[in-house]
Length: 279
Image (cartoon, rainbow, N blue to C red):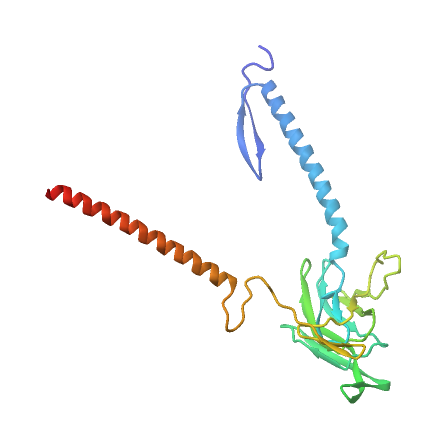
């Protein structure tokens, strides 16, 4: 009797995320089963390595403290949200955001966050700034949120309403992220002109020139031009019908006409049949 005759082997074979118990009739059959498992395992290992590579490549970028949206209009007001993810095994317990010293903001209002408290530190300007005809000499320097926890694998958002935004290409904020064990990560490094991101980049808000809205009036060389934007798709005035309304009315008329003709034909046929029966 050979080794492959009369031997039954039982083992668990992987099937998706669960296993199943299979009985093999011979050692040779068991060997082919092992080959399948080895190929399955190799593919799983390769997939795992690729997944780790993607995770490592995307992790640090996603873990930055950022300001959102990334762009806002010069001279306007905006809601800025500072997003803070936790990339450590211990929770984040404090977020501190310092506003640019050379770009003072006259108005800064903080949106409360459930479970967190905030403290606002102000500073006095050497020279007051003129905002809507009023002199402003005291502005917000730093806002600190504390008292809550951002657990590992989670993030929290902290929002402020600010304005008027300066007439500049961008604003750079400085942020400190404090962990429960006392570690502080300082997101304060400027991004160089070559675009290569540093290890701890500071949150940057890009500022774009203010756009002219609907009905905006511009003056050029002594002449006034009024710009109005309107949609031509299905557009209609208050007193007139749109093209869609006209098309719908035409369609309904055609349907009614066809229905009427069909009724006459059926009616005429019914009359003819009735006359044949009575004659």
